[in-house]
Image (spheres, rainbow, N blue to C red):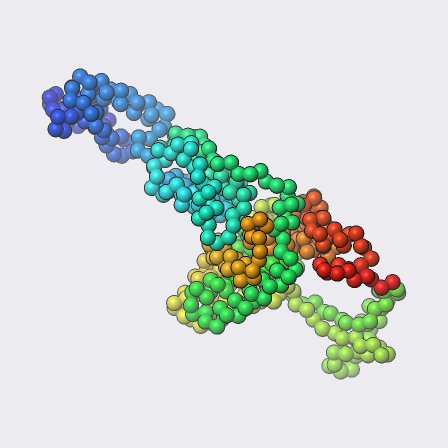
Length: 467
């Protein structure tokens, strides 16, 4: 843009009618208005000689014009601004279905860690390839909640470099990628899973602690900290019992949960005889008895046929919330879901202004805390670390124990119980190949059980089956 005020030719000199050099004290300065950036570029030429100042100013002018031609800015954005712009582009990818909402949340978490390391006010144009050499040490040493796995750090590095590559193409940074400190190669998947699985004793201890924390937090739900504690502990408890991925669980709404009842009839079965006729007789006897009285017992000779009901939850994981892009429905215990729903309802009925709790609807996130906000990753990490240490789980670093270990344990325990691999794959939203290649033969318990098929192994002793 041509300069408005014509320079006097002595204290101010025009450079191609778009910039000027002027004196401040004894030294010459450069000034030029940048239309696209809406601000002046000012720079000291660090010379007292007018001829040298003109020559330097012309070089700066040519560089600015070249940068404008290729789309490069003169004023750098901050690291925080760069992350915000990148996340906005990924948010658009979510809207058109390129990535899932859960994946977007993971990317956002990865880049938040990077901002903590690099600094939010760091200029993008000042970044150099070796600036992230200490990132691995930073993530390992500064994480107070639980050990960060090497695969997690490797994934974070990939996310960061994907963003840097995007910013490089937009001419916001001078480098195409960072040179990170190398992370040890990921070990065989079976070995990784085996080390991150909880034992039966550890799982029992964790369950006891979680139920205790839930009961403790219910005593005063006017306190927002207790609300977050309650929801976080229910999240961990339900993760333990369902094997849900984090992204799947956090996006569940009450619309996705359907409570049902199933009739149970307890009676005598002779395994040596056909089962179907025995069931038919029990149904007939139960029907006759119910027509005579309200008793729940129907007597067949000297054998009781007891009728009962069991409640369960139909859990639907929507297609848009899972990384495998396929909707699935599985059965889970109803009790923790019901208890969590009742807790949310009781909160809304209390009408306590300090909690700002909204009445739960079918659209309400199951794991929501205050004013419908979903449970934060930080809260999950904190309470996971707390219960892990309360249960005195040993060798955390070597075993790579993380919240995802609940999923590994859930699948491994179903494998150990000889559930059909296809049924496990369908319930857990993974492939048959993943189940058979990764989770079969991953524990000593399974190996021993396979070696002694005529006995039951409980982890410490063999119990031969009667023949």
